[in-house]
Image 1 (tube, one colour):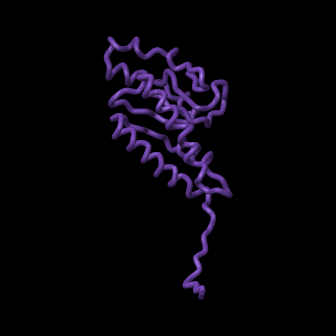
Image 2 (tube, helix red, strand yellow):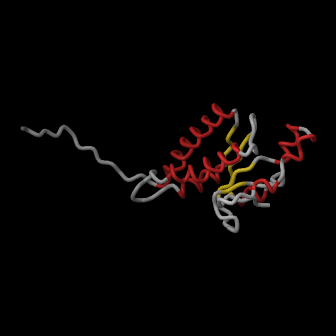
Image 3 (cartoon, helix red, strand yellow):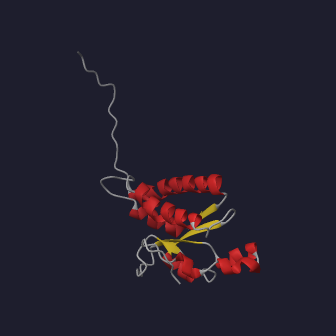
Length: 160
C-alpha cells in the first residue's frame, strides 16, 4: 500500500473578529424559522450580536459554543414568549442588551435567560414593545399584556 500526499492545507484558528459574521448567519436562520413557523420578525441589535458572538467564542473551540449561547439566550426565551402567548402572529421580537433595553422608553418588560438580579448591562434580553402591542391590538386587549405574567419560576424573569 502506497500513501501519497497531493497537497498540504494549513488552517488558522478562528479569530474573534470573524464571530460577528458567524453569529449573524445563525441569527438569520433563527429569524427565518420564526418567520416561517410563527409569522414573527426577529430584530437583533448590533450590540446584542456582539455580546452573543463574544460569549459564543472560545479560543480552542472556535464557534462551537455559539449554538449553545444562541439556544440559551434567544431560542429558549423566544419559545417561552410564544408558548405563553406574549408574542403573537405578526409581532416583532426585539433582542437587545440589557443596557439598550433600559434606555428604550417604550419597553415595559423583557425576558432574559440571565439571572433576574443581574445588573450586567451586557446581558441579552428579548422584549415586545408595550406601546407597539397597544397600537396593533387596540385598547380592548391592553389588559392582556400584564407584566406579572412574565415572572417565571425557571430562572427567566420580568425586569422593569
